[in-house]
Image (cartoon, rainbow, N blue to C red):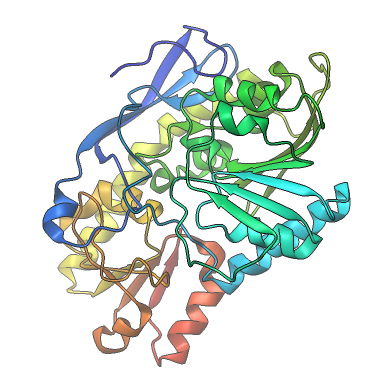
Length: 389
């Protein structure tokens, strides 16, 4: 499957600039057996740049595959570091736009953590929409209900004062159609929008190949994200980066005409194009340095584990699993433990496993958590070399 026009602006002036061969099409589903995990197919990822709007997407993305109804497991709320971060971000948003005693919709709510949080902090009524929602997760809240469906035109009839969408837009291929559908739902009560996506700028600058994986088909920069919303008659109220510049937030509201106000954080298409060129120049050397490092650890008979399951671990192991060094992937999400990694086959273990395994090296998939993980390891009497990505 080859897509030849930009999903954001429909332009055909495209440049493919980076390919990952045979990447698992899924990365964070709970799979109960090795055999089932190894049946998950692989497919090339081809990052492609739109020379018109600067949007970056996987032009080989298979839009027919069922990514999200087979046990999708993406909760981050088991980490105190993450809970502190998302609570602070949510409190600031509530205060900024007086999101109190309002109706809030979350598109792509996952297991409902954020829906419950924004409702608890602002005494709001919440509606979470996601086919991957699972009953029984989280504390019950009578002011919150969930719809286990993909967001569609049918849900656009639900009127809300606030529409949130966190870490979902990067999973949507037809991005312009999706945002257009949301805009059409804003006819009666103009809501405040609060969207969050990974930032491709940080991926390009750091050659963060571990953040490129099967489910992510859309990769936004501040400029391409803001342009998408403006084209669909939203005014960009604010645009900012959080979590060590990994996460990009946009706050917007519907307006009657296309806004021409550019936010200071937005880069030009030319600037982003230059970053893709720099990425291409550096990525192969970066990958080779990692390969040499891992092969040396294997030669030294060092015991190495990855800490942090899900997408980043899959993105990392896609490049290096054949070295045969890393046998265990650690995660604190109890719903992942005992499951097998799609198309790679490693079984997730919990931190307790490390007390007997006693690793020499822990590769941490997100350095934001380095203090939390170091303290956890030290509390178990473990002091391995800790490498944060």
